[in-house]
Amino acid sequence: DFPWLVRQAGRADVDILMLPTSDIGPTEAAYHDDMAVMRAIENGVSILRPTRLGTSLAIDPYGRILASSDYFVGDEQTMLATVPTAGVRTPYAVVGDVVAWASVGAAVVGGGVLAASALRRTARRRTAPR
Image 1 (tube, rainbow, N blue to C red):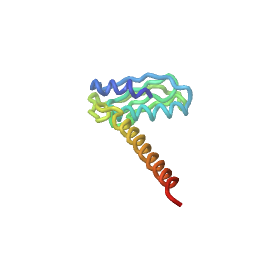
Image 2: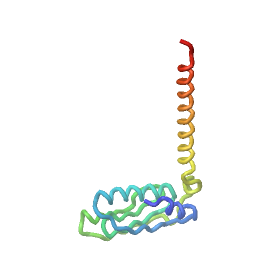
Image 3: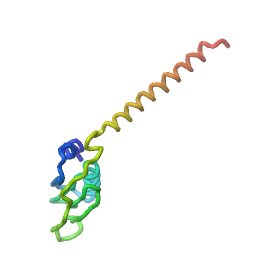
Image 4: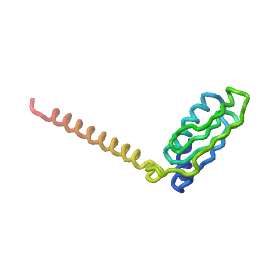
């Protein structure tokens, strides 16, 4: 969630990021767990994700879950973890969504070229002598 906020941490060379949250149910918690892992990998930071409702996680900069505690499964809500205190530099933290937006731009231009080509072929067929 909120990739632009987490990317600020990646650009600022933050090493550990705390993302406290409160999920509504197990399905939402699983989705947010996956997003937290993705943000750790993208930005090269360790993430501590304590939750009031949901799955608390400790994630290293490579996306490995080091510890977890699931509110919906057990009664024990204490989680201990040792996380790396040094993050890693990632290309995404530096360039962000440039590659994704360049791909979108290339797809739009490519679609325009294909559409123009199809229109020219159609126009030629209409004007060709029969």
